[in-house]
Length: 137
Length: 159
Image (cartoon, rainbow over all chains, first blue to last red; front, side, top):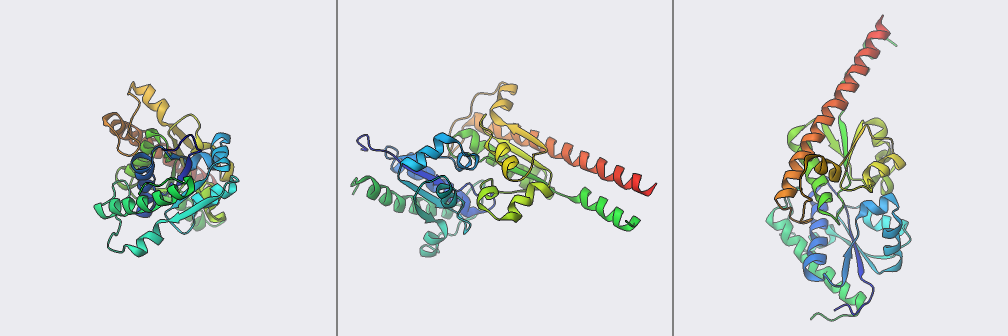
């Protein structure tokens, strides 16, 4: 349970050109919809591009985690640009440790890509627990 | 300018691809619709005639990314009335040649609001089809306008 504490804001990249972007998005959904729905809140990166005030307020006032699909690290940069501080996670870093899970496909990820997203989400869930002081073990 | 370079410029404009920028909004099913419709146009309906760029690159990328919409006619596709893609593209790059808002398009077609941001329901899948078809029609329209302008410019210059 989150006990009324501020939720952790999760900002995945919106990468549309590469499979790694889709893995970032899928990991965000796995984390926020399945693993830690009560402790997290997904914020659309497009709102930060627009400078939408409510989204900016969320990332300024809450602990945040960014999930990026490429070295340009758009999600991390935009959270900083919005005045927030985030724990930064990159798909490539997780993939380097799980080379057997090579993602393919963008609109529809292959099974390895989905599995990589699940592995990432589980790792990020531990970061959420750290940020919220909850123990899900 | 020589006739040859005028012809070359006209051909360049004729061949120039149309850029599609989706909001990809992660919070709403409509955002997923924008993403899947864009990919359908890019990979199936207008393969070879379209390109895409991640919306956040307008702000987080380099000048080359920001020049994108200045050097390509661009169509934005947004999930909701916030119109992040249209406003974002205009703020950081250039005014889009055309824009779509999925929620408006679905209202126009009397289709129920899509559900399932991670895995779209039937209404969502139908929304992808309708949005992709509208996008493809806009791509043709935008390319047609560019072709007419290119031909007219070339023709005038040669007279």
